[in-house]
Image 1 (tube, one colour):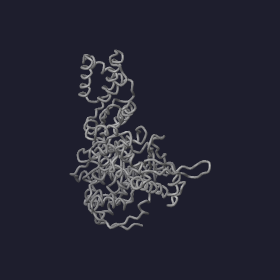
Image 2 (image 1 turned 120 degrees about the vertical axis):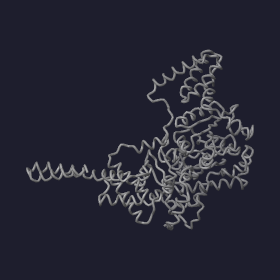
Image 3 (image 1 turned 60 degrees about the horizontal axis):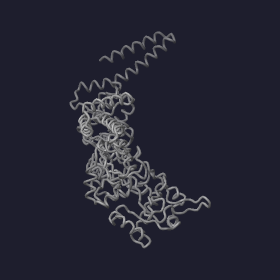
Image 4 (image 1 turned 90 degrees about the vertical axis):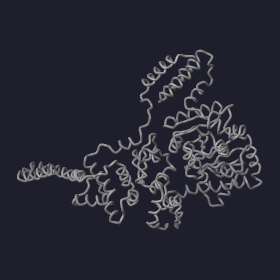
Amino acid sequence: MAERIPEEKIDQIRNSVDIVDVIGDYVNLTKQGRNYFGLCPFHGENTPSFSVSPDKQIYHCFGCHAGGNAFSFLMDLEGFSFQEAVVNLAKQANIPIDIDVSSQDKNVKQSPELQQMYDAHELLCKFYHHLLVNTKDGQEALEYLLKRGFTMESIEKYKIGYSLNSWDFVCKFLQKRKFPLDLMERAGLLIKRERDSNFFDRFRHRIMFPIHNEKGNIIAFSGRSLGEEDPKYLNSPETVIFNKSKTVFNFNRAKKHIKKEQRAVLFEGFADVIAADGAGVINGIATMGTSITEEHVQLIRKSTDHVTICYDGDKAGIQAANRALDMLQSVGCNVRIAWLPEELDPDDYIKEYGAEKFKNEVIEASLTYMSFKMRYLRLGKRLNDEGERLRYIEEVLTEISRLTKAVERDHYLRQIANEFSISLDALQQQQKQIFYSMQKNTKNQPQSLPPEPFLLQQKSNSVLRPAFQNAERMLLAHMMNNQDMTLKVQEMLGGNEFNVDEHQAIYTYLLAYYESGHVPDTSNFMQFIKDKELRHIVADIVMMPINEDFTEKELSDYIKHVLNHQKMIKIKEKIQDEKEAERQKDYTKAALIAMEILQLRKSLEK
């Protein structure tokens, strides 16, 4: 068991960090009014419904109802134990903490097999890197890399390595260090021979590029041949820790730069990312040898809504860029395309023209959505042919019809009119016809701007609930802000309970919280609550807009709604008792019950 962290130290850490900064390392947040909004990291969504309150130091998602404080955010997202979350935030706040979080506690949510897979990858990464930079065996590979334009700085930063030209060196290396060979085969590091069930090394005589997940764990390798041997790149197979469709190369390093720059630069491969990094583009990422997927898009979108795509300049690269553009655009990203000339890839362009030109004339000079589409639609067309020219104009008008801003539509319509000497009025009429045709032929409504996040908040908190439930929520919201209000409500309830079990549990927690000497503090109160679901409900309640000038009449009305609901339940029970007495022909008992019902109904009117 790890040592217990003193409450005073926990409070010091909690009060020294800003939840906006903590969550901002994971979620692209935008200020709306007093709160910040972004895409929820706990469930997939395209419209921001995740709210962070700097005043209350809590977060809440109006979509999946996740909620909590800075500690619970790290616990839920990273799988940290409470102590790990505290230690992590202590580091951020530069607060010394003399606690050794034991490895047992650290990996409490991670199976030993998974940990062995991570450990083996980490060990081999160090070994491969050592072979490349420090041994004669790796000299050929090192010279090859340097000749290809890699620097020692980039080799060190990305821990590039070399695998020996041996069938079983890694196999023996891992076995000697007590790693089970069948597990290493499932981790993708070894191959099992069918004829005799012996194991041998997957990677031999290759330059090794380690692949990390977003938390920074090494989960796979990509091995490049030193010459023209096939395959040119040999990647780890898909395993329980490596899924190509969900892995974005360099995301673990680039995410802080993406936050700072408010933009990601998306490349086709990791060699381009490394070359661009050496040229000063430090917010570069790449998909892993596969077309961009929905999972890639969601991961990128949670970090930024501005993306520059920089794929190869050949036909295949441009077509891939077009697909990626449409996918990123569909989730609300503002996308630009860096168009590379002469069918070059980013790595080759940097070698030929240099870093400054790459940054200024490729990345910074990237094309807007429509400018790229107009270039893309020209590919393979002979515009001096009347039929192909008209087809091109119609395709461009279709793309213009997708634009949501009138100024943009007008700008590109004028551009087409000038280029082909066509009447602007005629183009505008045809564009409108295409727009209405698209409306008619699709079941979906035209794309519109996403609703403002604060409207989502209002919508979420105006869910139609019975009056007694709304009353209980409002009472709890005010009680969490004011200890005196809690005592007043306790007195007015007179021993009665809230009608909703979860509300009663929160109320009980709140009484215990104040009795323990705590002052009103939403973030601290959420930490005081042990039940995760109750914390989510608290987060939803405290995000409600409330009237700070709370009158005695409002308080009485809320209490009345709570108590009246209990009376209504009693009335329904009494009505059933009355009917049962009549069925038993006990008319005296039925009359007495009827009097009780009458008295209860009169009390409702008071």
